[in-house]
Length: 426
Figure 1: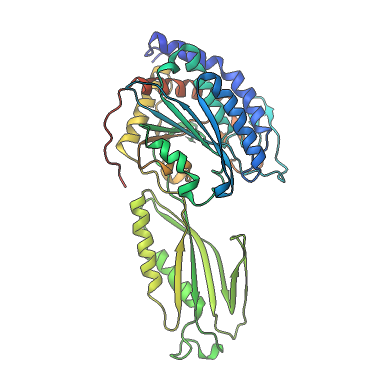
Figure 2: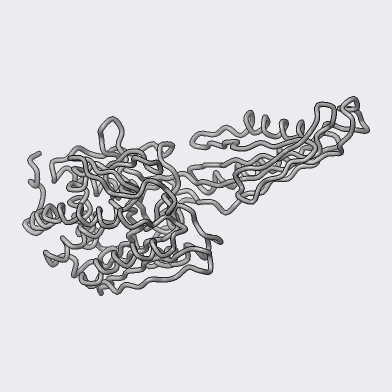
């Protein structure tokens, strides 16, 4: 199909306006990347937020910065463009922070021809400029006038404040007044083909602790001495390996400590253990994560893990705790319908269709907090490599097609009559 052949005259104007935003988007990307906004650099996160707010306000958005000191984080941007109409109400989701704090040596935007390198250049300051550029194109053509759009940009996606119920309360509340959500993290590709993300797995950490009477190793396995804390830990972890396997679920063990003593450090990522070859271990612990494709799967696996933990070896005790974590964004018919709408736009633009991305190839994200409330689609940022590591890059050429896709999808959804909500899959 020839490019733009399936577009109306108004949509061709939107595409032209989106294309005209490309150079400005790249310049804004450089500006944002050169502002350090590591999650714990509160001033930097707010500074990025203020730049974004300054871009949105002239488009008719009511913008505000909301401090989030209650959860120990910088804050978030809320921008609202409400209209009276019957079209679908949209929630646009993203984040202002990066994993690169002020002490990181990786700090500046560097352009090398069609590629740019810099902290957060692909996770996800490219998504911020694509969001802004698409909205500017709609504003320039008058199409934004009839679009009901709410934007929530968290300042702590990379290291979320707690409790999550409070840290994501504004995003969840906005979802209750919307019909579809678009998340502006990076566009996923497989073998050079753009992919559509209709699902994201959960990410939940767990901590397992075992305890047992200590004593001389000559008594191990006896009725009096029991099996010790290390064997109890090994029993549980091996049972997890053998008994919990399900499609789309993974559970990793990231840290083990055990001996006469075993203590986790305050950072939660390291610890100390002591012991002797002839002393039965009194304490052991392990930490890991659990990732699932639905919240129902999470609940089922957590229950099975608790059952395994409760079946103690003689003389041993054990307990397991799960943190709040990120919920799952399950694949739903509504999410697939959004991808189908995007593929209609791809066809009209002369772009290949986007297949569904395997959810095992993508981590958790903010959109999962609202995925039980409305239809969701992820991946409106640009294509890049090396996210979360020095040398992170973005393919600047992918910004152009993402500007066009995003602007057209927002415009078409805003013209689509909203329908009564149906119950969401768990």
